[in-house]
Image (cartoon, rainbow over all chains, first blue to last red):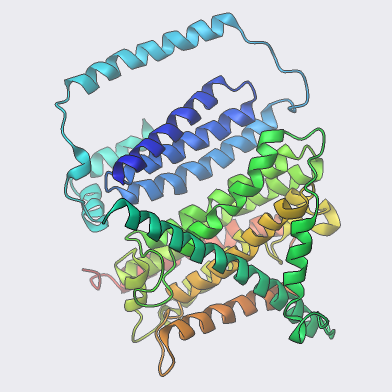
Length: 145
Length: 321
């Protein structure tokens, strides 16, 4: 069951992410972003982090709605002609992806493989306590990053 | 549990939830028409079935038989998806509401937050509907809906937080258990008022029905939708009304606690009483202006909610383990 949830969440996140980058219509791109955020929220559920999953939907999906409003104000209507793809932008995008992907891959490879799906499930109480005692500094620092 | 058992549970839960969503919406539409009729000195539906009870069934069949028109210049995929996304939260919300001790599809550890988070998804559906329709009235309606929902969510969350603080749990059944002696409407009257007002605003009903104000915007975001696609928006709206009443019952009215009657009966009685009050408000008050709506939220409800949370933190400190 948890494998199924993981695969569904990951698929949603990847497809949404691709849509967010590839779509030429800004509105579609932001819907892709919403999809990715929902997918990543789904990834927390098999990891026993329901609290984080729910907070992610509550905070980030609301934020996507706001971003869509800005898109509506700042972009031309969809029935007008769309601008053509720019080869330089595509090359730039691949470059940026590589810059972030290589260190990330190295980091992931260096972690010894364990099975997080079978760990003991922490309760909401424990997570809340940990966030406001042990991890209070990272929690307060995180919104600024 | 074998994979077959899991599948069976999913199918059963899904059937139960969808049946409830449909029947509840059919009943609430009938109730709304009867309540408005009584308030306006009319009869309401009387022809089909006893007291016109089957009128909405006939209407639903008519909607199912209607053609689903897709206007030429809409954004096809988003237009198709919008009613589905708007309807999606309805079954998800019903599934997380316990109607008595241990009765319900699922009683989550983070139930209170889950209900508030999932009802957010409908907003995305409304935005998609408004934008993809390629119609200025739809877009205006959707923009109003977002402005309203995002603003009223903040005092709503703060009000819920005060209740969660007192109960010491996000689990709905434990919040109800904490009210066995005194319902929270007596201990948290301000939070109750704030939550009730905000949740009516979130469900886009009068006096907060600016997103679908028919005298200004035709029908707002669902102007271009016909047949079953329109019905999905309708189902979503009436399920949201039920859910808001159920949350008020769970958080403030003591849930299924009550003497003599069966807990499920108590829960349903309280919930439909709140639904009736919501309808009563709709047929009594006129629509607010957009600036009144925003002023009321940011200058009255939000400070009140913050003060209420502060006071409850001081008063009830130490009661939470």
